[in-house]
Image 1 (cartoon, rainbow, N blue to C red):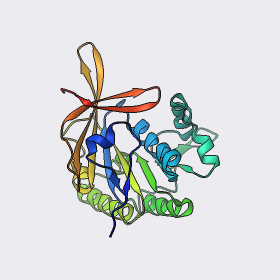
Image 2 (image 1 turned 30 degrees about the horizontal axis):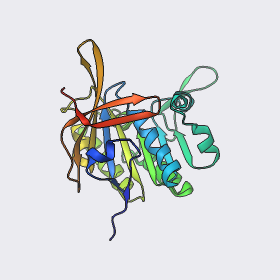
Image 3 (image 1 turned 135 degrees about the vertical axis):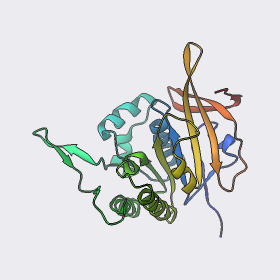
Image 4 (image 1 turned 45 degrees about the vertical axis):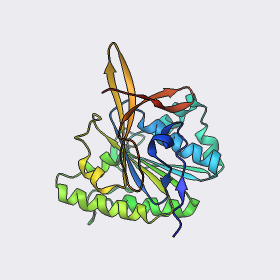
Length: 246
């Protein structure tokens, strides 16, 4: 079987990955607030559409889709145009929303009382992927799903099932994961996924610095060093020539 690879579209990232991302892979993108997870994920999708003609799907479990569209305009990414061309689908799968009267109501597409955890969201993803022929997928964030349950064995069952479903698709998937951004977080997600990318947003002197580290990538000889990353006016840029001390 020929392994089809996907370029991330992130300047400098493929270089430190030691190659491209394989289709059918589920990669955990873990970091704290402000580390650039959502921006990197949207850039991954947009570059796939524009440079490789690969349709994409973005599942948001926490942020308002309209806010995402608005925020991404600063990088020159017109998500609404891509949606109008059926190249990009943004799915609002937040567990709760509110009606016109201000009442908070559950989202029927994401049901906590299901027999197997995450089965509703996986069914929704498969349906949309098949409808648009998507080749790239990003879910923001997997933490919203895992934090619904106290039983870690139940969470593991759900995550394993979801990753198995996503790995069977002809897609490269980024699973965003929230935390403070250190090595001791998201241990379960990291154990089950084929790859793990850590994003850092840390204090350096009187300022803040961003970094990226490839912690795990099956089938790839990658560096384990932390590299300087910035969010420029054109999106995420990784500097392979600049190592970062955390």
